[in-house]
Image (cartoon, rainbow, N blue to C red; front, top):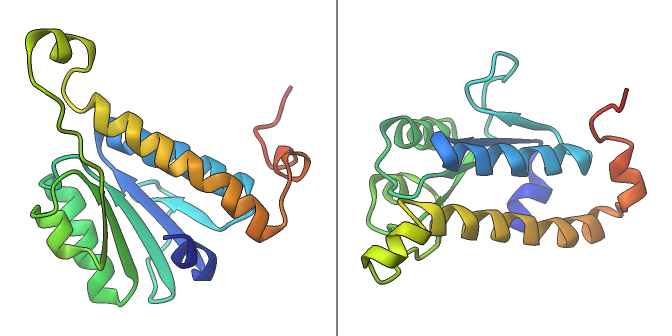
Length: 155
């Protein structure tokens, strides 16, 4: 995924619900790194072109819009990287590259109370993506100071 991000002219991120929030959080960091980044579905998002990469996040990998997004990205000739927990999902099948995050924890009342629904997947995804940031900083020659200049404007 690192090389795809570094080689792409544009980077697109997409997910629905809390997976979408993980995608948006990573998109913000990539913008702060000075990369050309868009979240699929926003009004200012351009068309995907063949020299782009789309990182598509879905725990189940079955959400219709994420599967459709991966199919469109691949049809255009761009790279579609799926982050999902199911290697046999429709999203995993549609993507050119898969990153599988196992979210299987023992399902008992105490565990589901502490980590309901896709919480484990979402947190693991956030840690994976945030873990890429220091590597990207090094490869791009970025620092906290240079990234801060692209941070939200403080009033």
